[in-house]
Image (cartoon, rainbow, N blue to C red; front, top):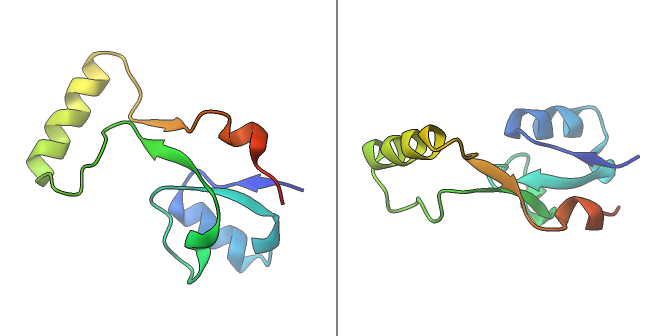
Length: 85
């Protein structure tokens, strides 16, 4: 079985159920449980590097992106097809 987590909370649940070895991909926001960041990141933010943005700037960027009808997150190119255990 291959599992891709699209939410940090789902990653935690998958691991709590003992299915960590079946987890072949996570989102850029997954950082728990310990060691999970070694899993391939398949989902990324379309906002670019928002680490230096203020919460207000992030909010504005998200609103602009959604207003244009664009997504805020995306699969990295070919990431899902290449996800393996």
